Length: 430
Image 1 (tube, rainbow, N blue to C red):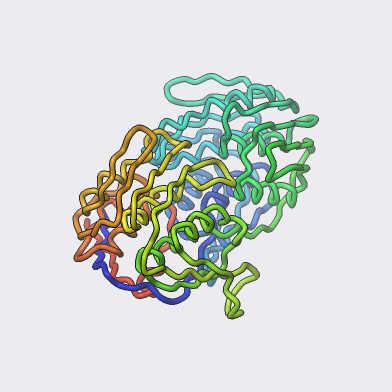
Image 2 (cartoon, one colour):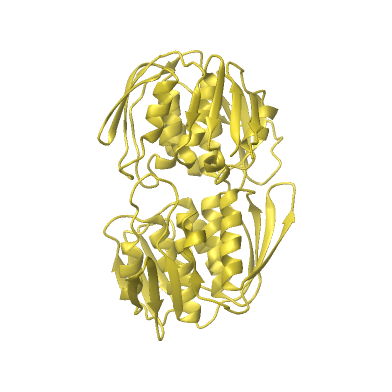
């Protein structure tokens, strides 16, 4: 099991290219099930979750191939036929996003058998809204022996209002509705950039999706979808993690290949904490996306934050922000509104010297506390990122265990940090 060995106290400087968003690439891969023609995806990150989804598609009988490029990989997916409608527990337990094959399988092939999902240990995250929505579209669904078993003689458009905002629920129903008869209206839909990116791909494939980025989606079903080529958007969570890394190490980093509009809430909160983030005017960016320059201040200011659905402050940046607040002058309150069990990293940060008190969905952080290197253990994807950030700012050596979590969503993070001047290396153990 791999570990990260980190020696703290290094100032990060330089330029770093942000990878494609794995949370946009995964639903795009599932969308390829909606057509028998090839779907090509560029800027796909080299992360563990992508490999898991490829294995799942292979299990279903889908052909896929990859080509390595300067930035990420180009993935070609061709679902000419379905060998099996079964998404087995052994694969689905590794990644909750596996449930995204449910809607496309039902829409195109009329049947699906998908294990109830797993993933990070950050809360229950039930899929009841996925099931309710698909039933509204005409699917017959039952749950047996830990599997969602669904069939349909043909999906039909309908109105469905989400009780609570669900990103994967919105994506699943949107994909299913593209091949349903008539019009589907999804209300209280997720507005995340990853949802909008999926809608863009579906429309390239011949779908009719309107309202992406708003609370109401209208999907007019079509008889058939075709192949398409699509470039995955930059990963806003990876970008936010590097913004925090610069702030915690009092460094100066330029982030290339980012979409600033996706980071508005994060940049605003960092500004409140005294971090300067500006558009880079050097003209050295290597893509059509913009570049951002972040400069860490000498003194950070404590600032409260509450997570929320997009365009609010992302729950996926909450752990990193908590690490930042341990180094800020004053006290802050971090409120988690999305997941009920997402403060597991607080205990590990406390092992490094952080002063944190958790009360339900609120974490009270008192800074500025010196962090010291320690042996810590990651509990989930974003928690692992917060521990790496803490290790970068800590005095002495930090050993982060179970870094397979961070490999799920960050592409070679130790290599990117090393190029910025960090002292971090991967230790591989049998």
